[in-house]
Amino acid sequence: MLLVLFLSRYDSNKVCCYAHPDAPLIEDYRAGDQICSECGLVVGDRVIDVGSEWRTFSNEKAGTDPSRVGGPENPLLNGSDLSTMIGPGRGDASFDGFGVSKYQNRRTVSTSNALVVLSSTAEDGEIEVRISMSSSDRALINAFREINSMADRINLPKTIVDRANNLFKQVHDGKNLKGRSNDAIASACLYIACRQEGVPRTFKEICAVSKISKKEIGRCFKLILKALETSVDLITTGDFMSRFCSNLGLPNMVQRAATHIARKAVELDIVPGRSPISVAAAAIYMASQASEDKRSQKEIGDIAGVADVTIRQSYKLMYPHAEKLFPTDFKFATPIDQLPQM
Image (cartoon, rainbow, N blue to C red; front, top):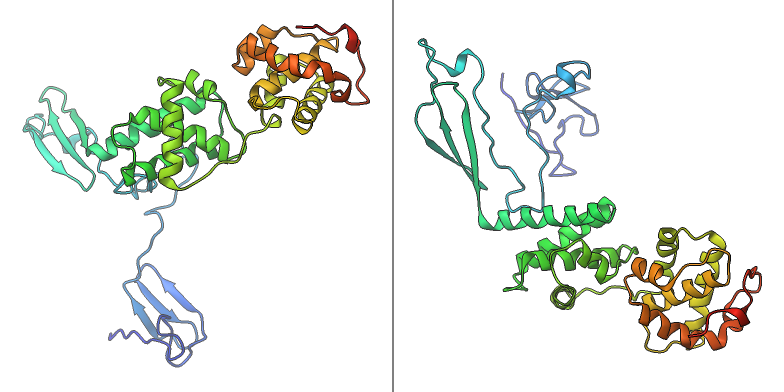
């Protein structure tokens, strides 16, 4: 049968029947044809079935999918992670008539992303698979693994991990930070991703789960922002308040009071030049000392990642204005005039 491909006179990119251009086409994947539903004319052939090779049932083969279409592509890798993995031979097909493994010699299979080296032993017929990836892909995979590991330790969601991976990929492809450690770049990318996703973490929190110093992470942070021409929102005291209070086990009343104290202190310009983290820590200390759930400077400093002296310095600036800072509906367990004086 002569198979003809007719293109619509209305749309050159649309495959359709020349007599019925608006009729829906029926796709016969078994024959590989596209057929007009009105007259039965074959208007296209060699249609590719992009589905699985056979149906999959959940109660078969322990729930594994028998289709051989491979794993999902990874756009973060240079070859979309379409490397070849060859597993050990099983069954009669792996051995000759004398029971000796067919794979006696060492041989190399080259793929787009990797170099797969195969070797085998005659005793058990098992094939050893080793993959020698390109240095670029190896660096990316190691960095993605490090980012994922750091995120797991501080309970960050997958959206932040994905953003950090994309940032690292952009920096890696642009070759903007030559000479810098990949671990330092990965840590800085995770810090930027947290800021951009609205859940900022302090440098000390990132440093605690990283192998890199705070100073080096800060340098890479500035270089990445400049290289990628991106920006991050300024951090405020409210970005850390709920997390710090939750980790300290403080009730909502104390958290609301601390949030109000920190916001008013910034609005009234009582704490000029102080970092939002130190202001938040001092506000939590003041609110907790006025409530029944008191926390020491050391307890707050350990959670916030600031020194006791830093909290005292911010508290000293806020204490004379305490009456203006507390919300009007706050229930004092300790009056303002009995709060600790530094």
